[in-house]
Image: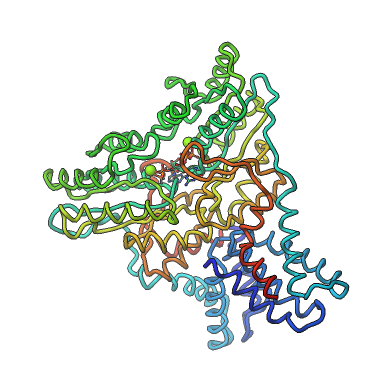
Amino acid sequence: EKTKTTFFDKLGKAVAGKSKVDADVLDDLEDVLISSDVGVATTIKVIDRIEDRVAKDKYLGTTELNGILRDEIAGLLSEVNNGDATDFTIPKQEGPYVVMVVGVNGVGKTTTIGKLAHQFKQKGLKVVLGAGDTFRAAAVDQLQIWADRVGVEIVKQDMGSDPASVAFDTLQSAVAQNADVVLLDTAGRLHNKVNLMNELTKVKRVMQKIIPDAPHDVMLVLDGSTGQNAFEQAKQFTAATEVSSLAVTKLDGTAKGGVVIGISDQFQIPVRYIGVGEGMDDLQVFNKTEFVDSFFN
Amino acid sequence: MFDNLTDKLDKAMHVLKGHGSITEVNVADTLKEIRRALVDADVNYKIAKEFTSRAKEKALGQGVLTTLKPGQLLTKIVKDELTELMGGDVTGLNLTGNPTVILMSGLQGSGKTTFSGKLANFLKTKKSKRPLLVACDIYRPAAIDQLHVVGESVGVEVFSNRDEKDPVKISEAAIAHAKQNGFNVVIIDTAGRLAVDEEMMTEIANVHAAVKPQETLFVVDSMTGQDAVNTAKAFNERLNFDGVILTKLDGDTRGGAALSIKSVVDKPIKFIGTGEKMEAIDVFYPSRMADRILGMGDVVSLVERA
Ligand SMILES: Nc1nc2c(ncn2[C@@H]2O[C@H](COP(=O)(O)OP(=O)(O)OP(=O)(O)O)[C@@H](O)[C@H]2O)c(=O)[nH]1
Ligand SMILES: Nc1nc2c(ncn2[C@@H]2O[C@H](COP(=O)(O)OP(=O)(O)OP(=O)(O)O)[C@@H](O)[C@H]2O)c(=O)[nH]1
Ligand SMILES: [Mg+2]
Ligand SMILES: [Mg+2]
């Protein structure tokens, strides 16, 4: 709270009644954005926009300025993130809605699946999990524990089996059971490993043998403490699997996850969920305004 | 994204070329570009600022006397400074305890469990030690199973007690077990935790106080951004750790967090993780890391073109 007031106060004082934003204030703003991992390019974009606005609408008061600042940052997210969802929803459709969850190692894919399963189950939806990580030590056990904890079905094979085959089984079983949602876990992989990225493409293709338009959502999970490398992650995972949504995890710590602003802007992918802890209730629907405000906390 | 540094320095050097010496004015732009490149590489922005002002001091002092062109000189200064900051020589582990106790710490998902297995394998095969792995993560689903799988794959015994919920008791029992059974290194895997989680930080501080490790290692994901300084500082304040492990360097991150952490806690980076397999471990070479952060391939070619 303290820093927040101080920053906005300072901003107000420095620009109120002036037609140009003080260099000191812009430096401060730059510091806030950069230290939130927003990145240099996006920070410059935001600052340029603010300077333009101030030059145009001369003599702004503090309140307007605070608003402008939030607007301009949130504006980068707005095109794809309009109409902030307030609830966990999936589109109504015939047959199961298939979500494939991808990302680099250790970002929180499996945990996010567990949390999502919990949310969907609470809404009365029938959920099936697919244990598509057959590689990492005890990955299937981990997902099994989540399935038990939440009380949903899981489809799995032995460790080391073909993930595409697990995906196939999962969809087949989901269709047979008349499930509403399928959440498919995949092994963590670094985006510069060509073979592993091709494997994802294959998993996706195999699912289409059962449900032609599956997966309906490819969710890229980003660790909120990751820096600028998240850009490359978004780029490569999108190339391999056409990522359609983002989830940002571990925002219960001090990291701000600002890199997603630039990613959402550049790749036009909406941020859908944020992870704020390790428990099954610790998943929230992404809220643009709150997210931007958290940079100034 | 990874062409950034080349582009930026190239542009900046253009400004410098044709000038006989480095002046406050012509160096300013270049240093701003270098600072930007460092921030793009995830070096903490404050540290990047300090770093570039230091480089500037050096550049201004030496300018006219050298036979190098200004662009070459500046590049060299930046490279040397960064290498120096990353730390001098390769630092090994202190294995003098009986048994030696090694405690892992770090954020969630940074690679502690995987690295515990790699280290056990390394000590067993390369240092002829008899390590024991200890499962002290009582929270994460299947964390104990994960360590058992990892231990089995490298042929190292894993000590666990699924009924015990106190990591202090588990680790003390493990050390007693090690003494009785001739294990000379005890590697304690712990749960991932956030620095702001007071309860969890107290938990690991208690383990640390109870087992008095020879080596407390802070395991950090090399893709970490600006927050690396906060986390490293907080863990260091509680644990006064002995070294840093940088994981997932098989990716394409520049790894600027390494520089931030080094500057803020001044502890050696001891090992790096370069893959998911148990053999994917390497000692840390400061100069290679400096090269990586700067994108040295780029910088060297710039010097040649200058
Ligand atoms: N504090 C916090 N921890 C989280 C959050 N999401 C996940 N974690 C933790 O991060 C660690 C890694 O989570 P996983 O779900 O196993 O990550 P993953 O992406 O499936 O990992 P791999 O399958 O190994 O690639 C675990 O310790 C989780 O409890 C979050 O939002 N906040
Ligand atoms: N590519 C790559 N993956 C790694 C490396 N080190 C660990 N991983 C992967 O990162 C993920 C997380 O590793 P863990 O060892 O489970 O991390 P942790 O710190 O024990 O996680 P928590 O116990 O949940 O806090 C797993 O998918 C590992 O296989 C590495 O050096 N390179
Ligand atoms: Mg997983
Ligand atoms: Mg672990």
